[in-house]
Image (cartoon, rainbow, N blue to C red; front, side):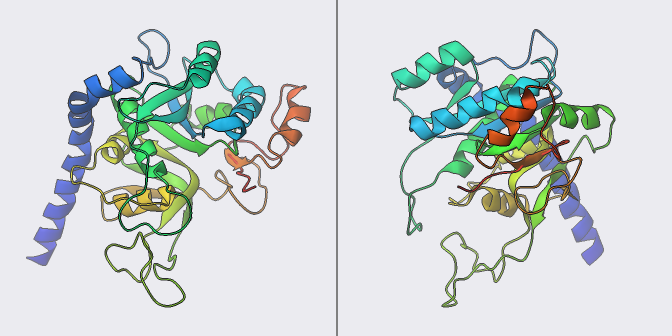
Length: 307
């Protein structure tokens, strides 16, 4: 009996993921097209191989980071028929895009403005309010609605270096599952309580430890991206974006692929990485880009600076 119940639960989770793309497409099409200005995905009618979303911020710091990325790894990325790269920007619903960002996007066409509520959430204490997970969810909804036929979505940060051409190479070599994939550098067993033994402000379920999650950058198949965009049941606010995504996917019929060599947000440098820290950011990359090649030891990944 217990086995039958477990098999039925797994089946329900699989159906849930499969149905999500249809649900998100129909529920959010008008909302996202209105706010994103009907931002297009790919070129013509062909679907891109992968869509890369880079979390970015407003202000001078965000502008400088975007300039560094445009001058470095984005210049080496395949054309937009293969790779679509968008900086994930937030717009408060009902508020116009700031003029300086609108002018920047007129020149670059790589900013994606998505409706996200700005402000604190109940249960959050300390530091600045964070809605990064909600921004990622809005991005995943946009991908589901606008990028018909895409199979993979990579999320990164604006202090990371991404070897997009190497990523596409391995996708086209059919090295990864085409469904139910969550691929990244996983952390596990992170304490869900503080030193006083009280639950973390994100620990609504009073866990001793959080489920494993991929830090900084991760690759999802389109079905998982659709589920992240709209998980069906309301998802409680999490101030830590990548950890919140791990909580969201915990217990579902998803393949966890641990890419410690491909995703290197911290630690040593290995060949074949996709995502790695950009350090300065951008100093090392600029010198190598003159030769039209990636920095040493950036074959497919993103290192991420934490400055």
